[in-house]
Length: 157
Image (cartoon, rainbow, N blue to C red; front, side, top):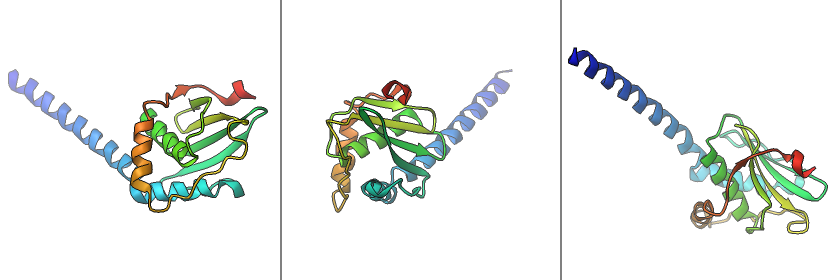
């Protein structure tokens, strides 16, 4: 009897470990230097129109609202709230840390930063250059200030 219980617990732990390793592997590429550099390049080119999709499936676009501007990040697959929060913090660092009105989780695949148009009239993102480690560290530190809440852009229309 005890042997059966122990075997069941071992199988359950093995499955949980495999699921966690699979999830960690998926986010490893999302936060890699290569992907963050490509995301920064896509954000820097937003003034010319919607960004191309990065190799990890992230697309950025601006949505102009009556008194606000929103940066919407769309993912090909569902993102954990902390992953979406970090990507928004990374974008905010590249924008020069303007004071945002809201940091929203629109759904499992989309998240947004909302600014008042007076605070950021013409959104522009600085090119990354050689400063990726500093920007990543600043974005990680900025997670304390950036609180992701479930919501929609309808409140800002």
